[in-house]
Length: 81
Image (cartoon, rainbow, N blue to C red; front, side, top):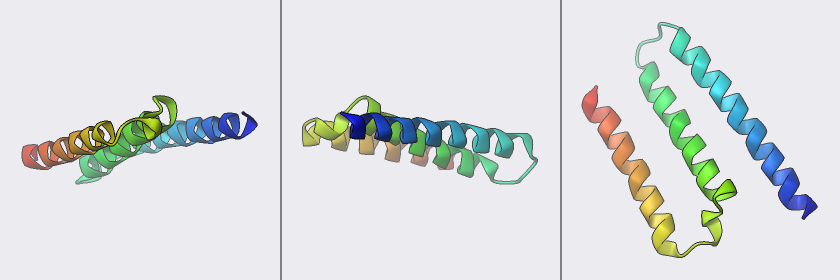
């Protein structure tokens, strides 16, 4: 139980750090920052999906659906820009 709480805390702190980093990238006028922000969003999605939604204990189909969703998201971001 304590291991799970520690892992949840580390994941939560990493999510907060990723939010701060993506905010810093969005405030700067860096060209192609949308790719970095989209990549950080994918990392946040996967960490929430596998840690807090507990998809790591789900059937392989649901894991693959989440990975396909991420791929479609990244391809869509690249296609739009």
